Image (tube, rainbow, N blue to C red; front, side):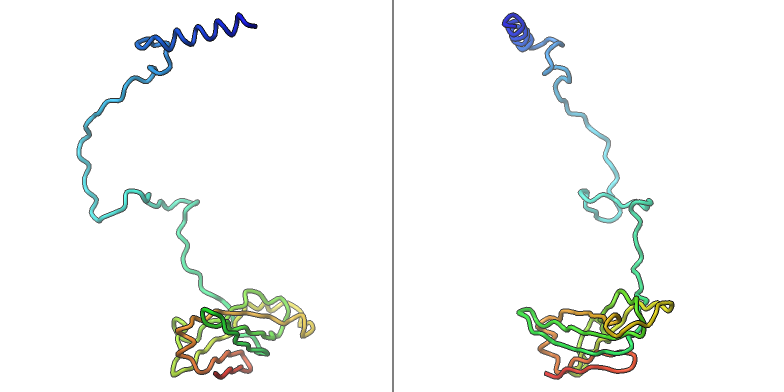
Length: 172
């Protein structure tokens, strides 16, 4: 055992001492050298060389923005506006006609959810299948919420949430 260790250590020292030998693993790739390249054409528009160009493959398809197919929920039953440090949270409960409702959202009634004359309007919408049973009121209840910034709350005196048959209003 001692003999193998001694021979392997001696071999390692001999190879390390051979600076110009091809047996030394440090010399296998040689030294680096500089080589000039032909000038590449400048791109037509400025690009960031660190960001790779996108290719349209099956793995990196660009998705089109999806349109929301939700319809108005039948009734809006509860509207709560809870203050937070960043503004407020508007929480709404609704009652659709049938069970199986999903993807419930509070959709702004105005572009970019801005109040018009102090009134901020939302619509309670959901995707509602037609082929589900009506069921009990408890099994049909849905909820949605949305956060409002402090700047929007300051410009708002009334929050209105619309349903298909009614609306709920909260005054400041």
